[in-house]
Length: 83
Image 1: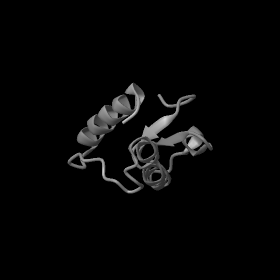
Image 2: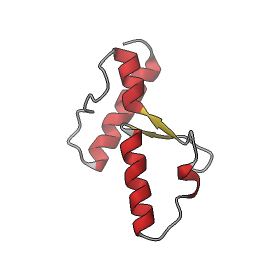
Image 3: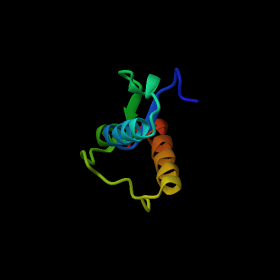
Image 4: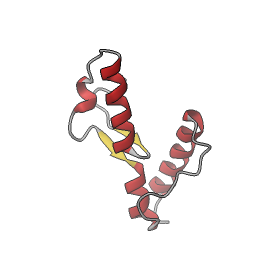
């Protein structure tokens, strides 16, 4: 359930666009996922945290489960403190 929560994605603008396109293609409503501030970009947070710069790849095999695990690991590192 994502209502009243922030959706964290590594490349949030890309992922939000993919969700929007697939939602439209299936005839569903985007609803709360279209609200401003609903998405947080982990790639931007990483760039601010370690100075890696925008566009730095996540480092996973670029499969959904691997990306989720790698993003969670990165989020935990960022939450732990300075790089």
